[in-house]
Amino acid sequence: MEARYLTDENGKRIGVVLDIEEYERLREIEDEMEDIRRFDKAMAERERGESDAIPWEQVRDEIGSEYEEPTG
Image (cartoon, rainbow, N blue to C red; front, side, top):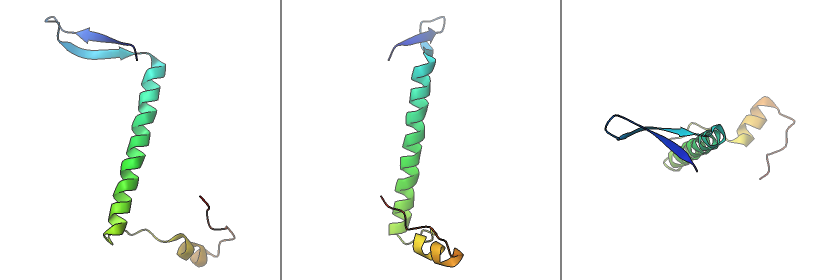
């Protein structure tokens, strides 16, 4: 990663300039990390019995869905 730093009058780094591709790559990583944090939080809530998530089977039965159970 190549970065250019912005400095104040004392030479202290106060900002950074990145290529747009690098910035977008870092934003994608940030989004993925947030998804992981949310997943981990949901799983911890589920393990503690605090989750209000509804099991897929119950949803399928209640709406009479023609969808198969998700795989993966």
